[in-house]
Length: 560
Image: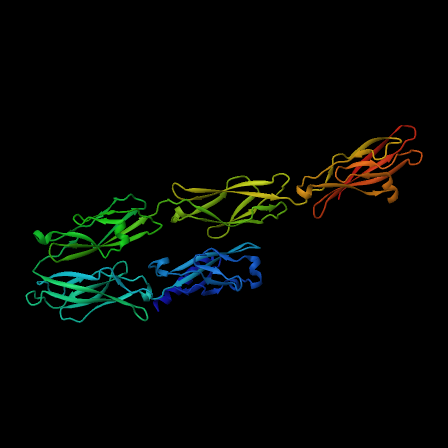
C-alpha cells in the first residue's frame, strides 16, 4: 500500500514539474516484461492516426528499451528492463525520454514509471557468521549482525529477520540511519561455557513480497572466558565531504574506538562491516589505525553518497559499530554535448521566417550550475537558436535568405555550462541554400542599333540580344524566341529568325528597301524554371532607300 502511495505521489510530482515545460506522456509498467510487450498506444496519446505514422516518422530516443510499432503506433518493450540495474535502490524509478515527429517537426516528453516486482531474494554476503561471547556477558547484551542485501525496494524489500527457537537468544530487526535493516541478537539467558561451549543458530532474512522470498545464514557462537569491556567509538556517525576526482590514497578520515581493558583485550582492529565489493574497491581501511583512504577515483555522476559501516573489535570477544557518511561534491569535469535530433541542411531560399531547420539537444552530466548549459551561434548569420523546453533548442530562420547573394553558411554552435571555470564544446554544421526561380531574365541593353546592308546575304546575322538570369540550374538557363510581329506568321518566317541558345537574329532572305520599308517584332528571353519567368525586347527595323545600310533599333520591355 505504501509503495502504491509513493508511486502516485511520484507521478503527481512529475506532472507538476513538467506542467510548466511541456506536458509529458505518462505510462507505468512492471519491470521484466517480455520483449514486444505493449506499454501504451503512443500514437493515439499524441493525437496521431495510424495513417499519419509513415509521414510523421514517429520515433523514440530510448531505443535500448523501447520502440514504436509503425503499424499500430503502440509503444513496445524492446529489451529486458531491470529496475534494479536502472535505478538501484531508489524508491521511485522512471525512464524518461523523448519522442520526435516530423512533417512538421515536434518533440514530446515521455515518462515510463518502472514498478518493482519481487524478483530478488534477500542475500547474505557471509553465509557463516562467527561470534565469540564471553560467559560473563549479562542478559540484555546486544550483538549487531551483518545485514542481508535485497535489490528490490518498497514492499518487496527486506522486512524482517528471524532465528530458530532457542533458550539463550532472541532476535530483533533494527534500522540503520540509511534506512537499511539489520538483525540484532539479544542475550536472554546467561551462558555457561563449562556446560555448553558453543551454540548454532539459523538466521533467516525475509522480504515483504507476495509470496515472500528469503535466505539463511548460519550463526556459530563460541562461548569464551570473561572480557569485561567492549570497544566504544568516539562517534556513532562520522560525516565527511570529498571532492570528486581526488587521486587514490587521499585521506578521508580516521575512526577511533577505545577499550578500557588491558593487554590483548584492549587491542582494537578495524574492518568494514558488511561492505559490498564496490565499496572495498573505492575505499581502504587500515585495520590498526582506523584511517580510511580512497582506493579509487570517485565520480559524482556515478554515485554522490556512501555510507560505510565500520566494526571495531578488541582482542577478546567484544565489538562496536559506527557509520561513516561520505558526501561527494560535484566538480565541473564534463563538457556539454550537442546532439542533433533532426536536421535539414538544404534550405530553399524562399523559406518563411521562423522555419525550423534543426532540433538540437544539449546535455551535461554534471550537477547544479555545472550542468546548466547555454547554447548560442558564434557567427552573424540569418538564423537563430530558440530555447524550447528543458535542454532543447530549435534552429530557425530569422532573416530572409537570398541564394544569389550567399549560397552557403557555416554555423558554429557553442554550448557552454555555468561551472567555474566553465566548459564548452563546439559543433560546426554547413547549411546549403537551394535556388528557387525568383529572378526573371534581364536584357543587357535597353536598346540596340544594328546596320543592315541592302541586298544582304540570306542567313546573315543582323543583330544579337543577350539576357542574364542570376538563378542557378534550369532556373538560370535562358532561351530566346520571337513571340510577336506585325508581319503575317508565314511572311515573318521568310524574313528573320532567332537562335534559341545565343540570341542571334538572322536574315532569312536578302532585303530590298523598295519592297519592305519597316516592320516590328518582339523577342523574348525565357528561363527554364517552373513556373518560367521571361522578359521581352522589341526591335523596330527600318529600311532606307537612300543609304546602302539600314539601322535597326531595339528597346527592352518589362519582364513577365
